[in-house]
Image (cartoon, rainbow, N blue to C red; front, side):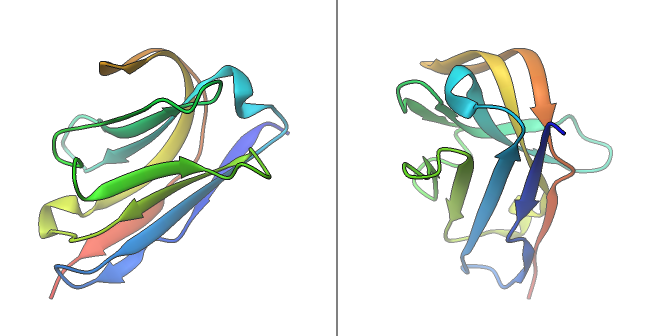
Length: 126
């Protein structure tokens, strides 16, 4: 079965940190761009960050620059992480990962989404 499973979300106070994990099963991540996206009811999904499965190139949305770090487990190569620091209430969303074709250098652009997970909820509140 081809799928992504995310974990690591939760409730955190403003200024806090979380580390999200996303594990792929049933396919190789080497051939895709791997991205973290977030969704808020009533708003369009936002691409937060991406990493190239082939060469490790990364990209970040302006809202994530300087606060979030995306990485891939070099040993397992099936797990992608999103380290989030200095979280703000505006970061509250359901975060999900996806494997897509497109661009992850210069800009993050999704041409075709192939696999995605159900997401993990992040709530930033005092």
